[in-house]
Image (cartoon, rainbow, N blue to C red):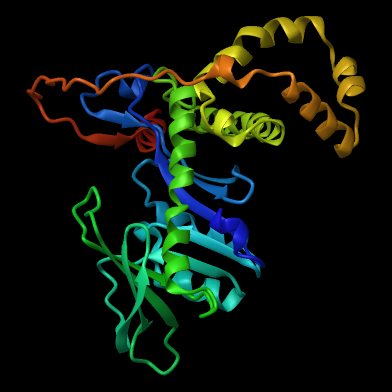
Length: 336
């Protein structure tokens, strides 16, 4: 993994997840035609440990994800490297991160033009295209922030139709443009984490419309995801990588949910204290012993053919998204 090869840096990715439309069980929502949204979670993902380690919550679903950047910066320090999409390309944040000694690798937003310095240099091919590098400044002012701009001319356009992506970074020149471009692709590992949260961890329930409750549920799902990552780390330690790569996350979730209730009834806290111990070495030894007895083939992913296209009925009436938090606050202020 490139993140592990970038010595001297703690590599993180941040991205936002908008909670889905909820049911209209709350009184202010019952006569509403529009779709109520319970909020947004901006999560930080530790790419080296493959864990969610921070969550920045927005109860107002209409709030911009970038409004969390002050809190994000508070949790960063010297030696940290942050990967982020163009929604987080906020110049005040980039300048503050650079002054604090933090490194960043952020996709350039179209609204930021900057001042290009010198000529663009071709660096070489990456897995997805040809990489170029050029110096860029935030403005022509003497105290402007000077950054590296790594551009990748893609072999295949993105899902948004972009043929070129531009990345802004303050990483030193020792981290060449090709490695920088490949490093940015690791941001998708957080997207993969969100996918497993949605499909196997019950991170959202349509019946939960209260923003605080919905965001709490999502955070609990992230904690459960982290616990399952420990399970997979134990499997990787004892089995061949190819076998563990084929283990189904859904099958593991079913196995845990099937037996957890009974184990919690029969086995009390004192049993787990004796079994796992209070020392890290004893815990890791126990996990590896259990993992060695697991047959990964019994939890193999199922293979399926290509999906058939489904025609969706046309919408007869447009539906807008509304912020549940705003509606609740409005209803509270109108209550005598």
